[in-house]
Image 1 (cartoon, rainbow, N blue to C red):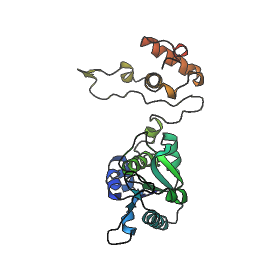
Image 2 (cartoon, helix red, strand yellow):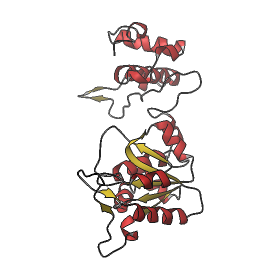
Image 3 (cartoon, rainbow, N blue to C red):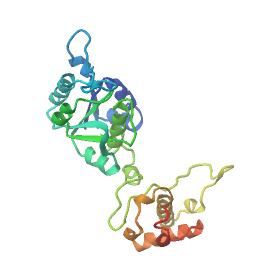
Image 4 (spheres, rainbow, N blue to C red):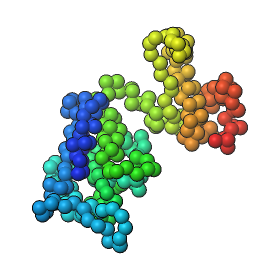
Length: 263
């Protein structure tokens, strides 16, 4: 998969993406990342890429022409079709389902704004969609673009050493018959005994069915306690509902049917 980053600081995204899973995926030839600086396409001695907004107000707005030229160069660099995504707090929130959708594409062009944003006419003419990583404002789109690259790249076939790892992540779509998105279960490693506590005995039992049941129950409980908006008891299977209610009872909490309005 090819990522093209249109940004005043394209090297920043490349540096962030050059480590860990994404860096290893690039080394394996699973992805490439190319930066395009609109300042390289600006005219005049000062290579200006922004100007004051019409109507007054604080800040500066990025100009159409340097960005448009950078986008054109990015598109022309590879014949594969590219989806242009503008990183913006006004865009659709990025979630795991969206990351999987993007991972199925051959190319992504990520447009990173700065200052007060980008001239609206450029967005209307050149951008396929806007994407947000949360309800807050950053100084620019580069950090958001790096998040998108990481979330998408780890889903590419071969990016993870264990393909099952991605399937067990938080927010992964449930299997057929399993309602709701779940957070991941708790994880433990050596030592078995520590001053901060012991590893749950079931994880040491070698009973794979019992371990799978415990992990499922813990994922249900953790989601119920931390992100109840993700889980609707009415959509759970009878087995999951029983697991959840058992865990709630052990924690001294009311059953799921009686606590739906408590969050």
